[in-house]
Length: 89
Image 1 (cartoon, rainbow, N blue to C red):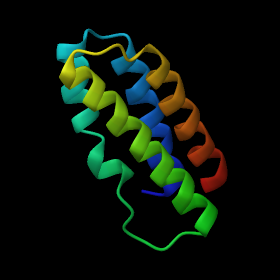
Image 2: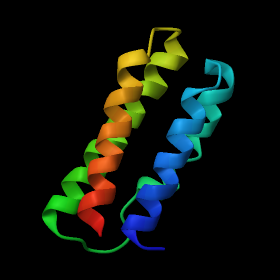
Image 3: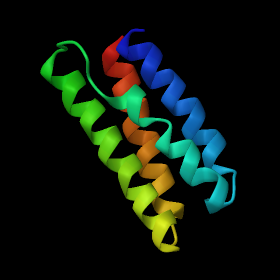
Image 4: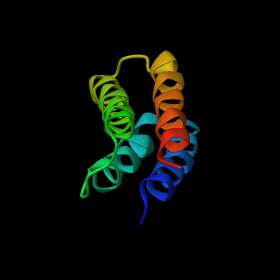
């Protein structure tokens, strides 16, 4: 699977998880870890974008786990993933 395909799947999953209650969204986010990991070399810009998406997703997970609001975090993670997807083409 290419980076662009991975980013597209992560983006779909993020948008789906955002609509779910925290108890359901957290496991959905945990399943994304394998997709956001790098297995092959990519241009630095793509690696930075992928890393940014990963960190943004982790921030949502931490907030949900702690019972904190995550509304702004969803937008950041979706934006970071869209950037990764655009650069990975």
